Length: 559
Image (tube, rainbow, N blue to C red; front, side, top):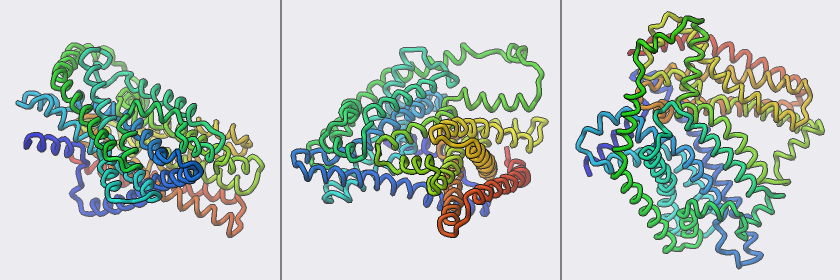
């Protein structure tokens, strides 16, 4: 048991971000941590609580009309946690794969007298704890939203707390079993540089279409009615995929101890099967990977023979792009994540149906009403800002170098040039996605050419400003010590800080524009010009900050 606890602690510590020794930087990061908590975690928590609470209120009203559907009171909660399990399954696979087979600690731990099931169990628990923090937050908020609008008692609260911290087990067990089988009996995954992440993209698109097909409805009222009478086929299907969700919600909503015990048994059996497989086939899978790595190793002479001289800027851009595109952890978190937003927005839009507030503002915009024009303009700016920071490309630009940081320091290329190239990489990807979405949005809004040009300028300037902001934050305290690529991103506080700051700035400027237009009476064209000037000035200031203080930060990093 001591060995198991030490392994879990070691794996958890390996994923943490090292703290700076300078007091000024420590205070700066504490301040940013408070900001991130206030503007990311708390809003997410409140939003999830509100979503489940209001849905449950609607279901209660429907049940009051027909008490026969009383058992369906928790269907709103059930739908939400099923979606959480789906996302846990999608992103957990890559995490489990990297942790089990491609982390740098494998070659050091395998020779030790540690049983495979102990090793896998400790890795599994560390992944569960470190990667499910946001998931725990969402689940606690979801259960809280349900409990607030239903009869609260100590039994329900206890089952909800236990459920919130154990619900991610089954999706991760699925990931673990699939990974063990694939790595032992197939050659689909020979190394980290593969097309596996394209499968994740396909899964997300399929699930998005699947969910849209089953959740589409005429109005939010109709959707809540279908939840109340239990006629959402998507829920029925997911109950077979994640049976633990059904029994947990039944236990919480109907205070059913038997269902709660069944929920526990399902998790225990799934975990037992996972450990049994791990004990039998894990080592063989790891050896298979090692053999493939040795077999495919190319000699340095052969590698050098393929090299050719070309422009160093072009080469540097290609290097960073290839790292992002060919590394599954970076591809899924930095690039693939950009594709989630349209699916989420479409789902929100469809769930609200014809009663939704989004459609209302769209119609206002099409009719050239002042409120619609104002809200759409603010939304374009806010979305551009948040999308740029959410993908973590800029805020992990230095962290991704890891043990290869000497490359930055010793190649005959100025730090300023290298940082600008990293900014270009981020803007190519971030603004690329923003621009594609902008085309679709403007087409749907029937926007004028002038509006499209203004939206594009605002989106581009937002992307530039927040890209350099993310790079600057990452130069202050980059996470350079990591065993695998996924560790360069997970636990990297710079991403959260960058997102928090972008949300604050978007909130302040967006709120300011709204106030000046609706209360003070400033004309919208004037406000658009003011925002463009502010973003341009901010971009210039943060650029010079990166070129001065950011460069100094890079020079001060010890290797």
